[in-house]
Length: 130
Length: 136
Picture 1 (tube, chains in turn brown, red):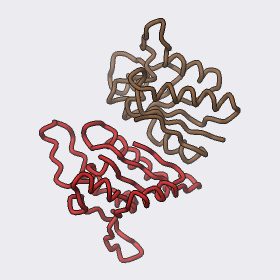
Picture 2 (cartoon, helix red, strand yellow; picture 1 turned 90 degrees about the vertical axis):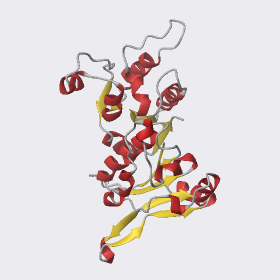
Picture 3 (tube, chains in turn green, brown; picture 1 turned 180 degrees about the horizontal axis):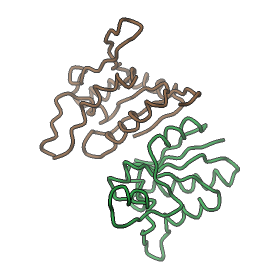
């Protein structure tokens, strides 16, 4: 089966990202396809490479990045939601005249059309959030 | 943009200004309109407050986006389901909601009501009929 995953909540505050991670990992290990993971609302905060959790806790961002590396996963952060919340990549830094970036390179910033396209192309859209 | 036509249902459950879900849901609806899918919106629980008329956000200092709902007809959104029980539980009725319409080009651009009140049971059928449920 082909899945699209939507994550609506940030790391640590909510379990949504953890649940989505375990779901995505299990689906991939069972041989399913994950067309795209789309981060929306506060979910965009899952893409911050500056996240520094205590050493005895899981690293939510690094975990996503590793999974993406292993499975060539397409992880997209909504641009409008990212701009509101200060998630910045190189392109956004240039466009909006910011002085830094904070996004992990395994994620990419793009538009909401990527979510709609993922929903059309996939057999199931699975939403993780409140 | 795409040859596949799916039944899209945007499910709105939250009040308009306490969190950003309502506004960011509406942004998906507006962008999604370009994909020519068969779109429905559903409002239940505190989500019914999103459609109330006379919203005034001056006190909370937030952007009042309620006028956007009136533009949904121009985005080919013709089916807006509102759950009766959610309205009743909050002391609301159809009269408290904006009058949302769409123009039927096959009927000399007559304005037709977009909002359809449905029972909780009927809402389950609406959800069941959708290929994709965007839950906000």
